[in-house]
Image 1 (tube, rainbow, N blue to C red):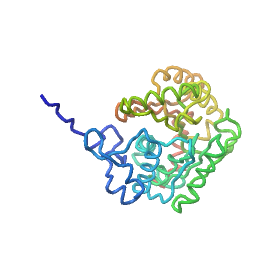
Image 2 (image 1 turned 180 degrees about the vertical axis):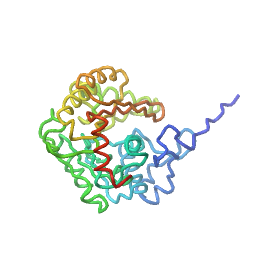
Image 3 (image 1 turned 120 degrees about the vertical axis):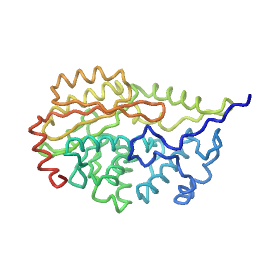
Image 4 (image 1 turned 90 degrees about the horizontal axis):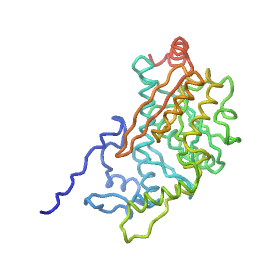
Length: 323
């Protein structure tokens, strides 16, 4: 018997309902917006138009086309050797955070530039501020320990009129600090977000990247090492668990500055220690939001130090115009 061709899903149902990438990519439209994408679009094993996601240049140009088509971005580029973010996954984080704020604001998503978000580890792509600003009008502070990444992020902001004055990217001078040196002690932030480094060493990151590359290529093809494995964006001493634990410990000292702290947690086994440190710092409220993209499961962990009374005061003053 001949094998039955697997029918491809027309909609990525695991993505957030407001995610602009739920439907399969319209490559004809994307090529119209960004003609440089055309040479990289070819039929995949199912006969559908696609790009080779193991080819960093193809992914970079696809990202540029998506940002132009979905978010009105006229310029987007990042230096060689930096992470090309999966836009659908990044967008889901923003939308789930917006839903959290909605649940805490009388059923309305707080929108506008008066809603300020801190992106810890903004990266060269500045992807979270782009999505958060274009979809909800939020203003952002983006921090990073890498001066080249900050220069790239600022160049993206300066080159797009719709983003100018909406995002401030700052170099974090101390790699061990998360909030010190970025926000003032009297500065109020409505939420902080973070996509922490996952691996504990460059060697671990390289090994994982090679494994994924080999899995996605033909047996006779020469493996292409992704630029993701070359950058500290994917690894730090102690990996995700240590990074998030230290961020939580420091967040306690900025308890009254922020309505809600949050972070992505990719590895489920890290949750136990993360919950323990949240208990240790006496976080008033903790919530975990599951996210699913394809076969991968991730989650957002959120916490606050504000009491119910303090939360009500916060939203009735800073978010009052949205009631």
